[in-house]
Image 1 (cartoon, one colour):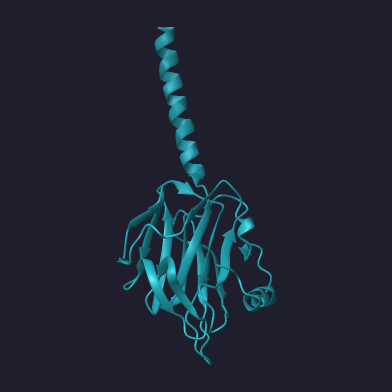
Image 2 (cartoon, helix red, strand yellow; image 1 turned 135 degrees about the vertical axis):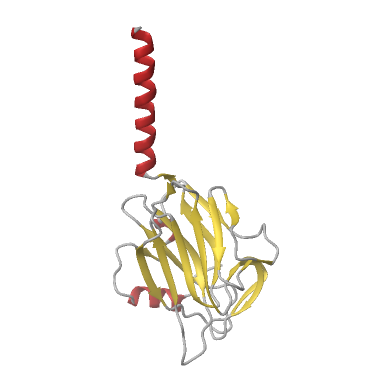
Length: 209
């Protein structure tokens, strides 16, 4: 898959967003990628484990390992390539395991378009409390003759606080999802240190006796 010039031009024209990126290289390593080739047209609301420590959930009509999607004036997806797809209106969400957060995530995406209704995608990052910490609305514009083309949409944060990322819109398609390997959230570190402190205190008391 590749990003066409039209989509790149549109991305450059968007208002500057410190945490929204169209460059996969902005998602810093170590990186994990999900290409959905392991699934075979699985219609599901989830939860489904799509990678270690990463679970998919979606609205009614969501498919993992979809084969074909007609995106109207934005072309076609499929023909030998599998991906995740929403129903005509729906959300695809990817959530890290409890207690884990990441500093960056994104995917190659596209959506249905039919002039004059070009529609758009809302990409959002959620924190550990399931509250939105970052959200952006982007319209993707690819040629009607295009195949498996789209725009990379990623969110990068100055600290690891992304618990989940979602893509919502009209007939949304998502592939080549990448994310920075998640780490324990700060609260988990604090609990771990507190636990080690208690163990150390108990061991010291036993030694003193």
